[in-house]
Length: 487
View (cartoon, rainbow, N blue to C red):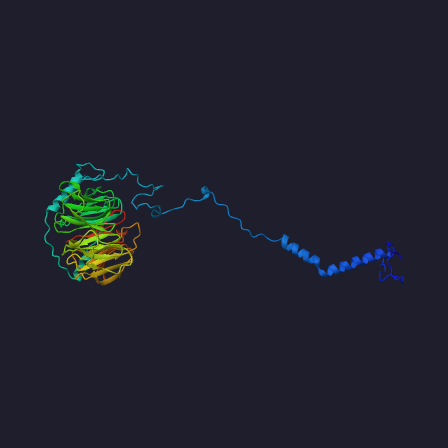
């Protein structure tokens, strides 16, 4: 046997210890045969552990795993995108009756220049001072103002006869005309019983006069006495030859006898509404958007207010003087509607005589009933028309009726104002968002009495309306400056 020199590694008894050479390996030495045996046993042992299969499975999991990273889409080139179509409302362009243009540029500063301070000649836009058409219109205004209207019976007719008179009033194409350029913000109707003369003020400060009785284009003209929207207009109750108009910065009186727009009052604070304090119209109550009310003497043009009082409102939209007790006036603010006494007004700390509660959103208008002032109708953004009892002027007025009404006119329509019919103490009119377009008449109980509509002629919302004081005549103005006359 071989020793430590590696030649032999057998047992001492001379046996091979089971290391017999396999078939085909008999020529190998004992050492080489044992080496092959060890290799074979090791291979069997590793095969029992299945290490190769585990390694292959691990390699498959690590090297062939899919990537779930999402690729960001490349933005489209600007020139590849089609032009987006946008409405006039989104482009903030006034809905005028003009063809659509490719670009909607805002009016240039020189297109609507600021109206100068002081008196202005009563000359229509784009016309000469001695135009025959202008002279004819102003002459008609002067002539009908000299005629004294007969004292109309201001008693309240019964509802049945009143409904019949409303049903007899119709709208025809010849009684529709565009009088101002932009949306109508205020209107006034001359009290003449012989001629229908309507004045309309728009958002741009224009005032349009329309002689409805004249069937030609000569019957209406437009003037520019203001730089901002005309919030309120009234013919003087004692002299209808005077047309008073209130803009954000000025209160003017259009005197047809002198063919001039006089400046009565000017303020840096924005005006919102006004009403006469007496029948002779020598003084007026003017409200500011900031909440202040002021007493103005109409006989002192260009002067400041005689009295300025803070009534505690964050904003004052409308003021209205009581038809009988002229020292009482109604003011409508953001959420507050209150009655005050002008005799006790002071600079600050004014307390109302009566409050009309219940409004949960901003109030658009509030007016006394025309004969006795025993009712007040309000328009609120919470989509309700409310009628209150103001007979006794208690600290809290009683709510008589609450009418569900869509008052969501949006920013492109003038807000609704519910106005009383001067010929009917218990009925008022208001515009409507309903289809077909209409002007609704309600009783103070909340009952709908009549709807003025004409599918062929009335296709827009008439936010501002005015009723003749003695005749069955209704005029509605829309957002494009068009007037509709029902008679």
